[in-house]
Length: 198
Ligand code: HEC
Image (cartoon, rainbow, N blue to C red; front, side, top):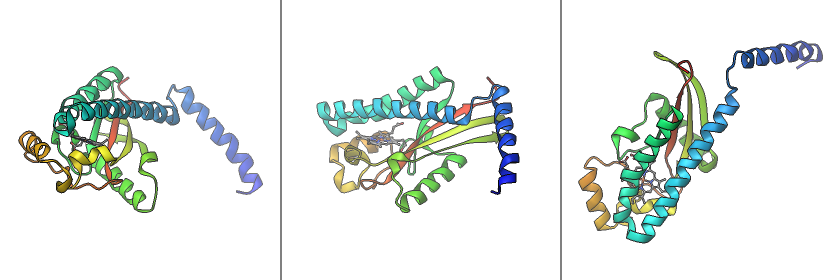
């Protein structure tokens, strides 16, 4: 940018920035930060409970952590924040909560592309303000990678114990969420925040 342009551009940008903040719109960076904190809290709570249950009753007993606790915690956070908070998968076990919508599908595909270029899945996120028929929404996605404990229920068939396979096939006869390898992109925490209705 040449000097003259920079002299004009800077005050214009600063004025626009102040104008947008003046209207009471929370800057995107702050929204992103709040969404990230919520996603990390969710993952941490799930991780801790899963480890505890795996140690106590093994993978077959721990299925309930994922099947009961995850939806319950996601529901609690959603009601408290007023945002829709859920976990989605690149392949899905629970279609009600896990199946990505169009925006999420595209973002997951971008994550997979970024991962194939060598980017660290654990540090990957994406956010955007989108216009939908019912108004504006802030959307945030935090990528989830396959870790060693996840293999017991999402890994290759050979690594899933027979009793776990039995419980899974009873509860989720249409389960697609297996055959993942360590380090694969498993899915994401997805947060959707209404912007206009507040
Ligand atoms: C003890 C078995 C078990 C383990 C271990 C496990 N999961 Fe799951 N996972 C499940 C079940 C059961 C569901 C379906 C939950 C529901 O009904 O909403 C699920 C659902 C998910 C979903 C939501 C998308 C979908 O397919 O429905 C994600 C994402 C996920 N798991 C990630 C992980 C990750 C990451 C780990 C490792 C940190 C992990 N899981 C470990 C059993 C397990």
